[in-house]
Length: 97
Image (cartoon, rainbow, N blue to C red; front, side, top):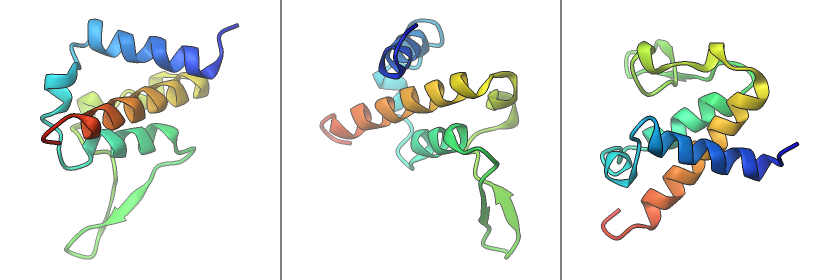
């Protein structure tokens, strides 16, 4: 059985090689979207935030077609969350972040 860190590493490699979510892609997301997606994947229930109009909406940062949380079991959701956190850390460590 793989450890959590091994699962996260493998998922990050998959994101880069299969999805094309490499450094140049990640660098386009400068408003915390990657970290927010990670938080949404990690949360056991949906996260909501208040809008400027006083309503509430889920914190998922991208369009619904990109939201694949429901198709994964809890381990996979947490694995994806970890890989997204790694991507955000890498993005922030690059020059000009």
